[in-house]
Figure 1 (cartoon, rainbow, N blue to C red):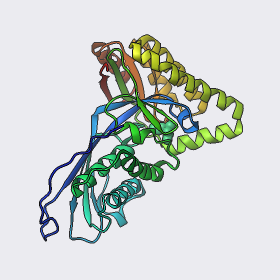
Figure 2 (tube, rainbow, N blue to C red; figure 1 turned 30 degrees about the vertical axis):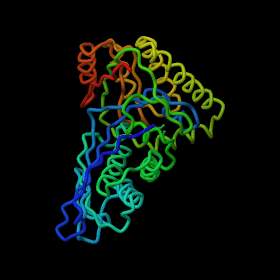
Figure 3 (tube, protein in one colour; figure 1 turned 90 degrees about the vertical axis):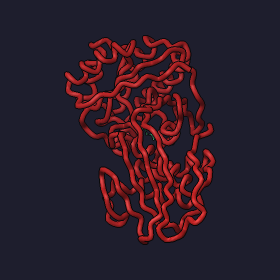
Figure 4 (cartoon, rainbow, N blue to C red; figure 1 turned 30 degrees about the horizontal axis):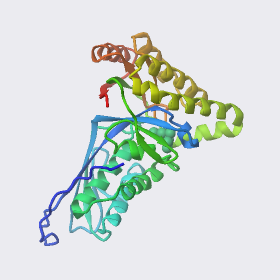
Length: 329
Ligand code: MEV
């Protein structure tokens, strides 16, 4: 899949004191529609882009000898940054090395509308935007695999053993099917309007993945059955997506949520939000991403219906909701 990487010309006296070069990059959030967790065990998964939740990064050369970061979460040097920033620092170093600027001292600014720890791919999106900004600064084009590897390096620091779906989904313009590292686009027969609801609790993907692993060790047959059912739901959803069959997709989402609960990654709050969305007329709803907190994704029949579902989700305790429409393609 070709990834659009922003390119702009740079002044030639680039390394002069008072260097005013800047490289910029953006990426967006993602929601996993089917197959989270099962994807870690080789099952296929489907993800959709959330274009309205975007991160923007800017990288500037600096005469200071240390990487400096400015973000809503932290401002200061890399050596004093909290653990949370380690994936970002990894992304900057990997990206500079990939574009041939390993020795360059830079400062990074991050502006993100993607909530952190909500299963929406915030860490992968920041890394993707950093890779694009570094390429922009150096005036080079990163190949799709080089780009992917930078994001995966950051993701390994964030989550340990990421399947790679987040890294692909935050850079893809439309819905994707991800299977064993390979990505393809999916057909969408009718516009699909989703409501995302924040449960208000952060969820650690690393913790959730570890929990599933532990359960699988304790009950291999039961967990493998659930993983295989999640795999079938993801694979079967491709035809529903192609036909734009919201009702069939919604039924699959409810089933997937139930199975994710069996894997141990749902919470009382996530279950309550799924029920509230369904009672308010959503075709279906499920947790999305790692779970153990984070967000619920609900499928509405229309944008008007989505407003009604969002209100119901807020009344059920979601501190914030977002509505997004995946265009027919
Ligand atoms: C996280 O967005 C998705 C998980 O399946 C982890 C992964 O695929 O690396 C939970």
